[in-house]
Length: 149
Image (tube, rainbow, N blue to C red; front, side, top):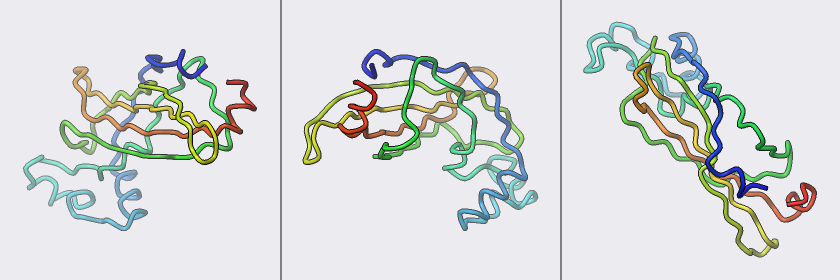
């Protein structure tokens, strides 16, 4: 089931890097660096405007990958990585989509586990990659049995 999903993608969803959302996010993570929240500081920076904190893409909508059905409970978040080509600029539109990158199974102390790697990608209006976030979801043997996989 999950092996068949490798390569599937969601449709691109337009997301805007909104100033107010960036400020609230920076406050919530306890990092109110002026580059994120002070408009004049951002204007004088090498970027010419404010940027979003590195984990801000967690707030974006990536759409739904058709035919990928993960359970609502029983999954383990194994790893999360962000790779940027450039910072997210306040005010810009980013087109985001999700993709199933890989699936593998391994035996562990708790039985056979599935490792599903997903990517959340953001591109600019020219289709150029701005960032890619990859995460690994661990699916326990118990959950896989319930799903009949």
